[in-house]
Amino acid sequence: MNTEKPNYFDLVYQVVKEIPEGRVCSYGAIANYLGLKSGARMVGYAMNAAHTLPDVPAHRVVNRNGLLTGKHHFQTPTKMQELLESEGVQVENDQVQNFENLFWDPEKELGF
DNA sequence: TGTATGACGTTTT
DNA sequence: CAAAACGCCATAC
Figure (cartoon, rainbow, N blue to C red):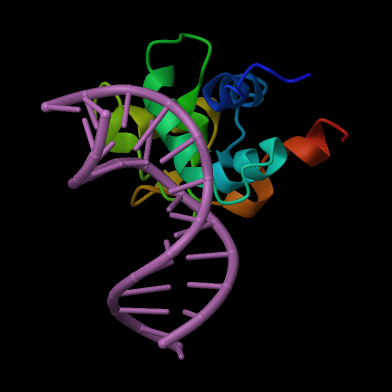
């Protein structure tokens, strides 16, 4: 009984909102956690809509390379890096340093 | 109503 | 090894 369609956007918001401060996550990781194996695009696009939501730290979500691909969609292209650095995440050349260490895995952190 | 595109990632050529 | 195409679903025009 699943007459309602899976609102991927909402699911993404829930996970992103659970990302602790000073941590970063990747689109694919969220997509994988939600079952969107190849729907990483949806996660990124969801972030675009997430802009209207205050509890969705999209700046903590980066691509698989740890690159701030979506920085250009923020209030200012540098805002994303500013926010990350403000939380303790070192960013250089639009790339998250120590990305592996700061990586926040939903399945792992949430204790799937 | 249909086409085009998008904050990615994986797979194949 | 590198580059290109595909897949996924929703929004925009």
